[in-house]
Amino acid sequence: MITGLSHVSIVVPSLDAAAKRLAEVYGLQIGEISVNEQQGVRMAYVDLGNAKIELMEPSREDSPVAKFLVRNPRGGIHHFCVGVDSVDAARTELSGKGAQVLGDGNPQYNVHGERIAFVHPKDFLGALVEFEEHK
Ligand code: CO
Image (cartoon, rainbow, N blue to C red; front, side, top):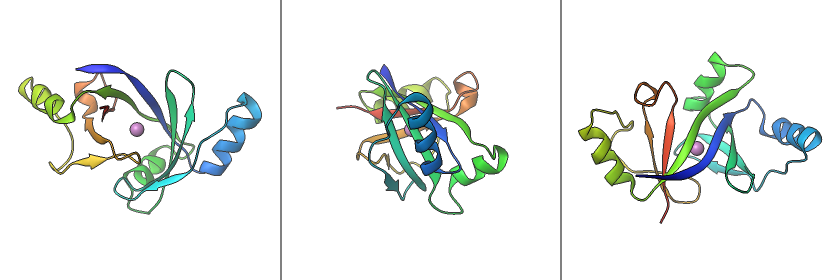
């Protein structure tokens, strides 16, 4: 079902400050900044070659990521993301095994237009996992 690691996602209070820090200390450059209105995030990726770092800043006050920052004001790791062949197939398989796939049933998409879904942390060893459909 899982085909590889896509990214590790970090919530930051300021995308611009995070980009500056990564460049100054680690020589890492962020890609294009985009906004995912559905997910309520302003975001950018750092390409590490075999996987990416996803940086997310809330784009609106009721963003789930804004709530994360209330609990973790300096930011922190929010989730990791793995590739899957089919989000729907993964959802069906996991539901059959009693694991909880989050969401209201409506398809969710990342900024690249790929289908995504999240698995509840209780069903992945305490970590929030995103599934990303890679065609
Ligand atoms: Co992600």
